[in-house]
Length: 612
Picture (tube, rainbow, N blue to C red):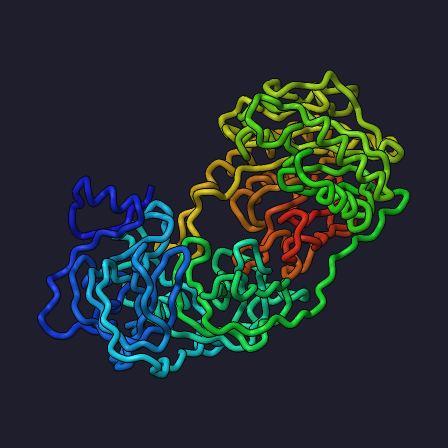
């Protein structure tokens, strides 16, 4: 695991503090001269006074937070003129009573520290703060320091400097260059009173009362108002998370969809947290202007077209309210136009996350397919394989798995001695054609690549006399990866190692099919949990075995998920050469969830239509 660089050897007690998110750094003793906020912040990401006691640090209170990480921000009104040094700092009070308010002129004494939200193993940058404070209020009702405006002109185009190889790729020790790098600009404003003007929403309001805006309206914009994440070198530095200081019980947080506008913007201290990095914690917050984003509807397949779709239904089980089943079913019928084959991800067992050994999902699927019929759709049949209890990841006891739904009036399923959770299906020869030894069957379930992860589900279908092999996937999650604001640049993407092995296993299986039948129609689909430009996707493509159909779309339309204001690809459909090229199929990423505050799932479904 990458470690935070430090110039001194830490003791066992310090190591414990590190695990809790306290960053140990060595620093010289504080001088007897008056210490200002910019002296505490310094010109790098780590305070030169970390671990030292400071006395009578002066500033104006710019914001008070009475929930979560309690405390307040102060800002020095006597700036040093160095753009690399912040004039603001957070004062952490913990359980102590908050006795200050914005506009108070205060003197603060306490210990300077570096706190890493999420702990040092998260890779997050640290937040400079004063802890164990003694606070003296000198006067009240003072004007707040004028906010620093953050906008398209002030945020540099380049995102972050490359980390120092001598420090495990960390940028912590590098001098800040706020005119060169977006992350350096934000760090140079840490704790200061900042303002964004009216801004477009690029990440819908979530359950934690936060949203994302962009201060760069032209940065990788798509037609629906989002900001597209198109490569590891295009991180979209104009994105900024917005929260508010006031409790939602006192001031409801606005609900916004992607493409809406936060009219009037926001003003308040610039914080750093583990769930998104740099965050404007608004003391003043504008209003959301609804821009009327609507859910998409794909076209219906023609008589000769086979429609194959994938949809992550987010831990669906019978304990969910009927409204969720109805909404998901309505989307299948109305928005997806009742595809012929639908691969579902995250179907849970019959009692959800109750961890009692139940693995069957018949009740879940019956309830869902009944809801589809009630919504005016076909009576889908299903095929799946129950997992071994608690061996496929997800919620403990939930036993998520992939499932094939298919419309028997349009397509038939070829039964071949259905496999079980631990038995691998193999490619065999049936005359001059390829076939599966088990249909449905799992691909190489004993492979270590699938440890604590969902095993691919393979099945044979027949449409208009032509066999189509469909492989439903749910690759390992991105859990454990460092965020884009990590102190390691580039961030460590540790989860990719497992997905790479999973992709290689699926790619090998597709090659086995094509070795028997060169022109076989193979569709690989599901929640791949990785980008179209990732090593995972490249491994799936290896040897020309598969083509990521999302690449048939313009770059600005390639997304199925919105994370921290970045519209990005996680769900994919890949096709073998037998399916044809971009001129032979129609691909649609149907945007019905990811951009909306009101979601039935956090993923958008994908649909492929082609003529076998």
